[in-house]
Length: 554
Image (cartoon, rainbow, N blue to C red; front, side):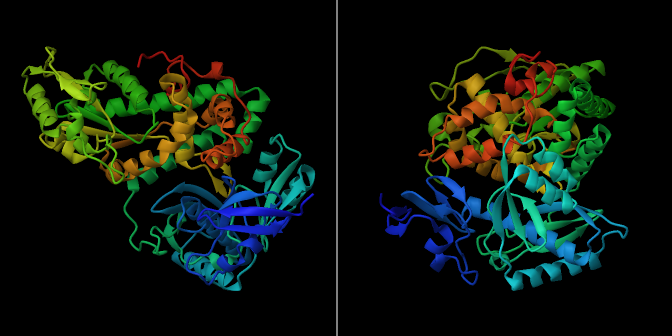
């Protein structure tokens, strides 16, 4: 049997090596921390590995640097580990808990006898720079589950001990840099010296660890104000505190205890309470507000949100009526194209904004409009005889990704509008040091919904996700702070339900397919959750929009 294997690189070059050679050695010339863009990981047959992976078969290799999407995630994960080491060296009795993304960084809660201050941030920042200069190796090892649990317990990481208790495996990966120990949730850079730039900014009661936002490692100096987003995250954390769940291990304990039914009921009542609060706020402005705008990124649950809000508005004596944006698309030949030459249906210019404003203004003035009708199959507007009018006691609800863009309703005075931003802002963590990105919750929601209701293959959903995200960055997130109120549609328990639907779909993607790495990453993520019977989900829940059997018609 041959002891050599052939490597084929993404640029077409080939190399013959001995079996069992480390990726680090194969890519040695490209892994120097002094390089501007050192190789920090690699995809082997479409799966992402750290550089301590032993190659034992002929394979395709794609080196990963900071310029890749995966590289930026590795950079963030590694910088976070350096922060933990710095905190351990300076403030050993302090507890850091990672939170949501904010200002191109991660917000951290700081639990200590002494409140966090500018001085704290400067000390941590200086220590992190020192650790980077020391160029400490970041290693990975695989340990039997009992040994890993003992290691984590001895290092005081009870949140991780609770988590591994529920993972259905015999061994788990552990990564380490000096005294900072973590579960292996993905590759790190090989050395601390690979980290080029970062920043720490006080954001009381914690701080923000900020990362480069451009390919030249530049960290934006001025934090964009995101007060409303921060407020809704803080509100969600207060709900989680009442529910006594802040990480996956604790959620798994609740599911395993048999108390999950009450947990779900209380979680859903929090949503109901928020709907009532928003409806009450709109009701107080009934003399001026005529248009309710609902916007948010993909798979946020905007449609169910608008239906549930309508019910609460009726309880307040209001009579909402929906106006669909779908019939205001321009003809296909007039639709703008994106940078790849494809039709950009998510651009605001894909809508006939002047006509929409003309009709909206007419409705609010009590006039009758002839509603347009758009045929998606033909890609053009058709003749319609449908008439629409409203009386002065009615409010118009408009739901769509451009709801917060001022251009969409530029003919309507601001005092006549109430803007709502909806997103699945996950407040649950994997553990103290590993967060759950809101994008992961949303893509899993979308995978399940696309397959169940749109007959889309899971591969197509994953392929399109990058384009969806680009559209959100351009058309939605810049306007989120325009909202009068924000609503978090995420439920702490939902990934345990979505897992049942998503796992079989993700497992259908084979290793030789380009979507395999993302599918494998999501499978590893869902593996952390205990499954939860979908029958427990109430019929009016926003989650039903994605798994089916909703009380609402879509």
